[in-house]
Amino acid sequence: MDIQSLESRARQVRRNIITMTAKAGAGHPGGSLSCTDALVALYFDVMNVDPANDKDPNRDRFVLSKGHAAPALYGTLCERGYFGREEFDHFRQLHGILQGHPDTKKCPGVDASTGSLGQGISIAVGMALGAKHIGSPIHVYTIIGDGESQEGLVWEASMAAAHYKLDNLTVILDHNGMQIDGTNDEVMSLGDIHAKAEAFGYDVIEVADGNDMKQVLDALHAPACPGKPRYILLNTLKGKGVSFMEGQVGWHGKAPNAEQAEQALKELEG
Amino acid sequence: MEKKAVRVAYGEALVKLGESNPKVVVLDADLASATMTNAFKKAYPDRFYDCGIAEANMVDMAAGMSTMGLIPFCSTFAVFAGRNYDQIRNGVCYPKFNVKFGFSHAGITLGEDGGSHQAIEDIALMRVLPNMTVFVPSDANECYQCVEAAAAIEGPVFIRTARLATPVYDPRPFTPGKGVVIRDGKDCVIFTCGIMLEHTMEAAEILASRGIDAALVSFHTLKPFDDTLACEYTARCGGKVFTVEEHSIIGGLGDAVASAIIGKGVVSFEKIGINDEFGQSGKPADLLKEYGLTGPQIADRIQAGL
Image: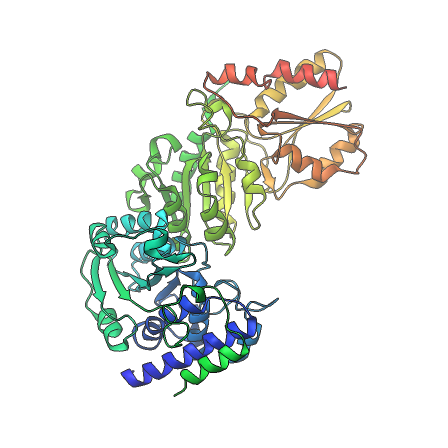
């Protein structure tokens, strides 16, 4: 798909994020908006998936390890055709398929239930290892957070990914630099995350602007490095696309009110 | 009588299962020579995955592998049921993934390694998780049956095994979720699970020699629990009930029985187990005595309770 079409889809997904969080009066818009471009690139250009056959064993797999960015995933799955926009009315509501965090038993297109940070990447490593075990050619993608990378499990999983030479795995870091209580550096510094990923055995690609569709696509389409898992470090902006949310820690887990939603949707037109 | 540790039977059962079911893979966290999965590792090196000393990652990796149609058995010490809890809960039970847990070295009969390693809370932790099946085999033969049953169940299964070599009894008919009547009686009923079977059998014999006719029922499945059998034997034995387990008296077999029989004609009810305290180093036999879990001690307590 051409860049302009992808960018247009990304704007629609961002509108979806605003719509559903505003309607629910809850959710995590900041970290959803920062990883939207990667999700759109994956679902519309990179991954081999088919909403009409969402249990196809030969589909590529995606795990949203930073499960609180569920609105971005739901917004993307909807545009890709897994379910209709009417589901946004039931986001975070009783009996809804769009739970507060992704639920593989309830939502079509969701391959793992996530939300407990650190677990998604570990499950993705297991999927990639399982795929190798059964001789399946699929590729497994996961998006992790930078705050999430404070979890020890992220590094246990990374060690295993390198040990088992999982070149069918791509870990994408949504590095927006912020988490609930402040910046990463205020809460718990990640240090040189690029060097750390390399030291753990990843083939690392750093993307200067992880909200630039072309840069994101180039990284996702880079040829695999045989015998090594891929790590794509996306430098992103929390709240990307909504002026009053951009770079603001406070929009991590807060929904816009009606007036704010209206302004945000206006900014995301086109 | 032949003795064999239940954990040894677990290792043997995996090898046998591996023969008939190519989907079975085994994961361990650098304890294959203790959990006895090294037998499987030797037989099927391509289906054995060492996860290093990283139990949390082992569980979620198994979750991911199960989504590819494999049946992963995760093995480590039962005390790590706590360390892995979030992964078992959210990674496996919440999505009802098809992952099995064979956790060994449970209870105080772990012995010399001490209280830090003696799981006395694992049954409680596992019972409370939705979608989880909990097996506590009482001997090697029952362990073979539990492993086979676990592979046939679609969803998470926890199998608690012991380190200590214990008597191997003749195989009994096995139905998951159903208790096993070891001995009929009328004066009281003893409900037990796991390797306390040996000591409760001895207790029942001692009581018989003193003119007390105690029934003995063993449960290899703690969840789903055989409420019907528990109620039946409570009624048959005059409502006088004792539970015996190598686990905390909080949240284990005793509480499973209590939930089943409450309001069903209970006259007296006593839980015998670890009394809300941690274990300590020692020889298994000495520890059983220290915590009041030998046959004669159990018999004395039951007699006093009657």
